Length: 186
Image 1 (cartoon, rainbow, N blue to C red):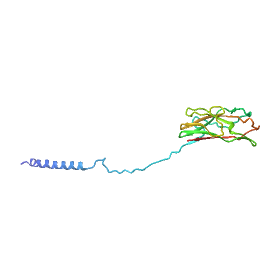
Image 2 (image 1 turned 90 degrees about the horizontal axis):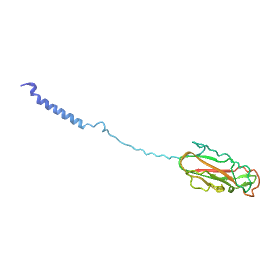
Image 3 (image 1 turned 60 degrees about the horizontal axis):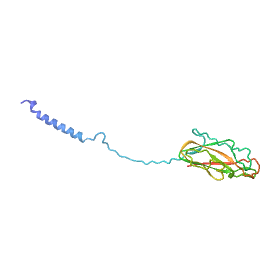
Image 4 (image 1 turned 45 degrees about the vertical axis):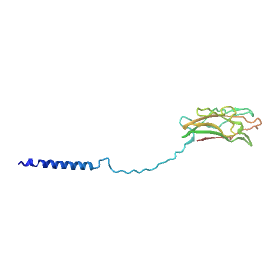
């Protein structure tokens, strides 16, 4: 009997046992993508503030210099000699602009009432129909809508001009110190 032939079944049996053990270990082992995981969440929140400001920005150059009507005749309408003025609004949300006379022009104890001071705005594609486009249609004795539903933008131009028509009984004098307040709001 040959020593090598007699052990052949033994070797095959041993190889089968080793192969079965190796396969059992391989199948029972966890693979590289099967690691334990645990999730934790954290809530987040923020309040984004609206930016809203006046001043030159983007391609808009603000020109809200003092208005000088020059010589005016009581009871006669006169537009501002300087022509058109321009305000520039930057807003991160849609906005409106209004204007109102807040301090009348005075000469001593006499004043030119804001019922005789007018504003006219330039029409924009986002402006709703307004009455402030005709002579004497928007006296500044009350708040007047100049721009409505303007889209959020950097340097939105608001172009406007003024008119004055002192009452026919207006005393003569050099009238100064008048103030108009513009309000941009979201």
